[in-house]
Length: 156
Image (cartoon, rainbow, N blue to C red; front, top):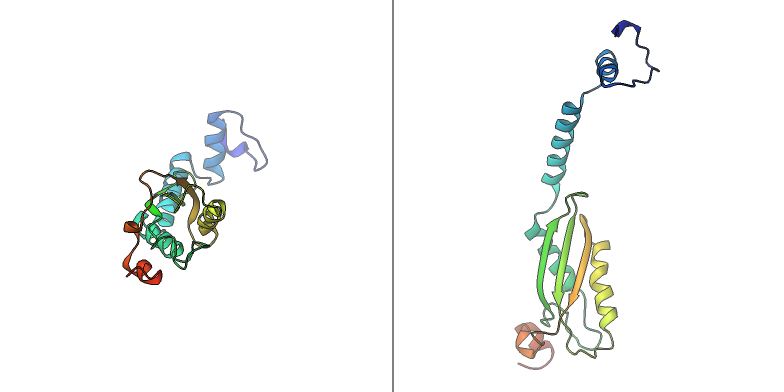
């Protein structure tokens, strides 16, 4: 293939033609593209919060969500048992799973509380999704409350 005969509007149909086309018009090859994408990914990830930093941001938001029937936020109330955050391999954004309980299995505001927890995604930059897992084992008890929560409820 004569590289001088290739025109900009030619459509390469073989690997050899593509290589010649790219060479003539200074198009990057796949290795160069991959290297550039790797550098861009690393630069993007360097700006993103670590898993631990994202967990702390989520906790800040959980402390803004109050149980509709109590004067205490759900985090200090001890409803949150575990927060696990990680990076989504495709989007490079954070995903979190929150394992929590409710003060009672018959809590009439359970869906409201879950929806409020899921809405944290809209308030935290870099967070793509929150999965909420409601469990009742171990059951919630006043022993799970922080001292601040106990004080707010008159238990101290």
